[in-house]
Image (cartoon, rainbow, N blue to C red; front, side):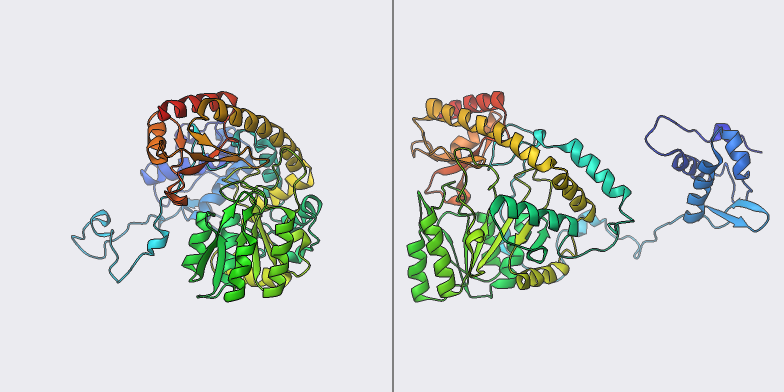
Length: 486
């Protein structure tokens, strides 16, 4: 009999389960011919004695190899190495075929990429950056999420989380979001009014595709969320713009357009206008709702950072005062927790939610049941609310330091208004300092900032995020930016 105790090396300190180590070691020896095809293996009790393990561990290893086809059982005779081993040897379809790397760059059929979508994608990293307004992922409750995820995994089969789920999202998270949005934003909604998505981008895409027909008019601000503009234009809608001032979108200009042409949708970020961070006052909000009822258009309200306000209580969303049911309200947890946590949501009339979930079925089928269930646990246990309170205090201090240094160190070159909330400052650079050059010099010296060109070169302005950098990093980044301006 082969010395299995020495052939099968097992590391009891490794993270890999012992039964999988046994299976891998047996497979390796079978492939090398040390354990030949057709050989009878010791019974599970004998193998367990040789390896000094519990018999159930060996049974699990044998079961694994039986499932893979490496072993086979013969009734009343025992367990044998399979005569037909499950080795897969790919066969080339064509002799002397060129490597894929040399031939797989261009399609063999007519194809034209949409030039609208060919824009650089900004990737966040751990490097020093005054970014678009990302949260500090270092302060997120990762341990709590890990525990909640383990709970979801343990309960996955019993709670049906491991199979196909609802296209509207995991019910426990929909219910948690319903409660949270009702409490924090005054939304009078039921679970049928909530759809869970993979972030705000998916939510906006689904809303535009379901509500706007090609050729119909969608109004945005002259400076607006660039990605949303791309979604609207790629969907075939006619994009029209209105001025943005210190109070957000010019609602009177919207009314003038409505008097001349049918409008299907208005995209608005009233809590903190993107990118300028200004707040739309109550009178403009009320007039916008009145116009929506009068002209029967949809208001797509993107409330991307409602949870962070520092000076006073925020004005409630448009959706909270939407008696005419004209508002589709979208948001995400990316600014609350982490950009990697792809959990967004839509609040809308039930028939709109149904239409969006039906469309979602053919592009994504459903979300991540396990992740959504884990996030629901964070809401249920109060962890998310505790994190929001902690983050708000931290970001409040960082905003104050950031704005003070921006004023004292860079006031000769940068104009800005101190934001009452959110995670970024809208910085307008003096034209003597071309932002594209400043951004390039800053990056060369270790600080990433956006050149702002996607907002238009004439503005010479960009968003400078303060939330994802601590006090020491803010000071270091300001020094780099100061040198770049010299």
